[in-house]
Length: 489
Ligand code: NAD
Image 1: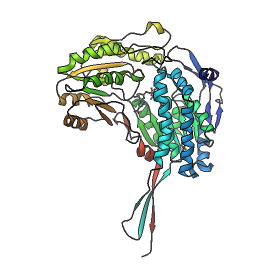
Image 2: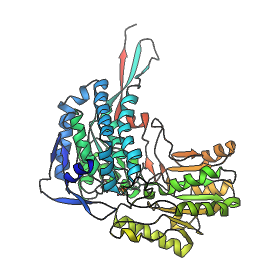
Image 3: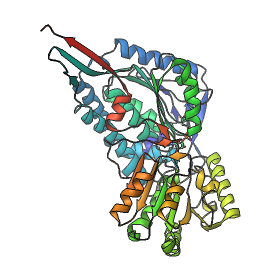
Image 4: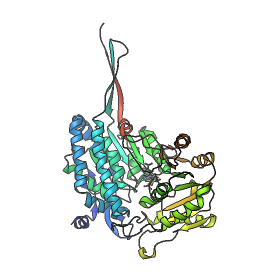
């Protein structure tokens, strides 16, 4: 039944002012199924013209529409309805996400799609707990710190967690009373388009959410960052793209939030619980085909347990069930594109030259038309290797031994990135000591990918600027204003 619905949607349009529209030029591009190489749908190709239309619609909705004037409670009720509809249509949306990304259906059904609904539910609940601060230094003065929406928010998202990351930005932007224009990744436009229809069904007023498909540099993405009526850009993607956006947004002086690349370290000390640490290291390396900014793609193992860990790790990596993303038993699916596959393969070659490939390394013959690489484990390399320093963003896990706390802290902090790290040890004092010296936005102790949406999420160094999550997101999508009252004595 749900497959039938998806079969009918063979063309994806922009969503502007509550309507689905093609581009003025009639131009389209294709979105492919990474698992099979088949064309999934044609997509209207947006340019500066469609971005301008979308921004005009968002600006009109902000200045003249009901959205910013509604009570917070009314806005939250609509956002919660969007979350409810996502859950009601979970099977269909999950299938669309799997077909568009190549990720296992279980991952879409149990991870991406429920989390997308949760983003709306969470921010709707959380925003209603916010208090307005009042400073009363003198009995004759009251200084209120109020939060006001910014106007039109520009949102630009990547392909690895398409609906999950789009809704992570849309929900806080809208709950604060902004309107927005989303430019989803060109590789994965499907579920964003479905969200447009869901927004209408939930009663979101026209123009509050607008979606324009297209490319980044010299395309719709760049046009959004340059548009004078866009107040802020919330961007998730590569570090190099963040730098380009900072430059293009500077002429119109926009507020910026950047969630960029990562090169997560996963540290296993000799006293770690290996029953937990090893399977988690495998998940951290290969979940979503290793295409997660938070992936634990660099594994550091203390010398005394190195051989034992390598033996178990190799077995577990070889046992990962790679295959048809629509099969509920599948644990690892396809890589997003041919380009990404070729980029990852260059790193595998480097691993063969510099060290030893202990598992994987080859394309999967049974899926000749798609973008498939067996889960790959590489050892025998130095920490200074590109394999340990650059973001690969694919199913490749490197393992390097270390002798001491000092050495592994230096290894962990040696990359330009600073998003996340995990450490495994039964010694609580050591965990605290090491966690404090790691230069990342997130440190997990004896776990990985455990999230509370109220906490700050983001990276240090080349991994980002600013934080998302809880009040950090709500602060970004609002302007603080002081209103002072002076009374007569
Ligand atoms: P990307 O930077 O290539 O593209 C991301 C988005 O930016 C796309 O929508 C693209 O069209 C747009 N874009 C590209 N160039 C642009 C430009 N000059 N101006 C405006 N928009 C432009 O990233 P990707 O390949 O889609 O995603 C993978 C990257 O995202 C990895 O580096 C990964 O670590 C990062 N990522 C980070 C987080 C995080 O929270 N820190 C989460 C997920 C992914």
